[in-house]
Amino acid sequence: QNVTAGGNTYVGHNAGVGVAGQSHAGNTGIGKDALLALRDGGHNVAVGIDSGTALTTGNQNVFLGTGAGYATQDVDKAVIIGTDAGLGVMTDGADHTVAIGYAALTALTTGGGNIGIGYNALKAVTGGTHNTAVGYTSGDVCTGDGNTLLGSVAGGAILAGDGNTCIGQNAGDVITDG
Image (cartoon, rainbow, N blue to C red; front, side):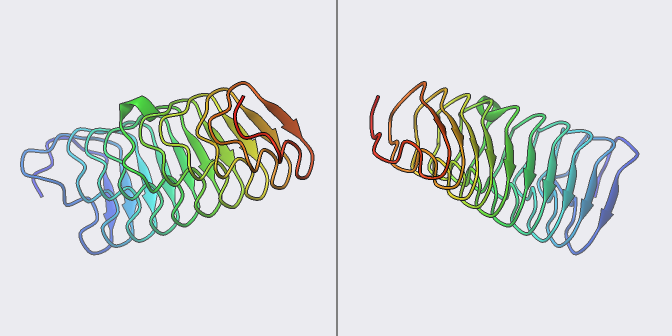
């Protein structure tokens, strides 16, 4: 390692290895390949095998769980908790993402301000923005913007719809577009 800043803690095979000439500070990587590619990011926490592995320039992120934020490259102020949560190639367009639960927001790449809490919550969102889904598979096929989905399987059929509010178990399960 050629770290030009301090205050980093790395534990595990290849944790925080990065590239030559890297400059980052205040990072914690625990687990095999945690924060492996980090070059310029600061104040990131990655705990778990392959957590935050591809992150190169992100700041103030939390990745917790096996594969959490695995392919994320450049995101800031994201909280990704759960096995395979935030698994997509998140870029700076996905800043301020919150994904909590197994495979929550697993396909996200550029959509910012999304909150997915629960097993497979907002699983299919790639570029949709400002969606909130809380509950088991809530919004799991949703790709739209500005949807609020609360409850188990809420908004379960919304594909490209925008601005929907669905509250309760299976609420909005017939909405597909609109």
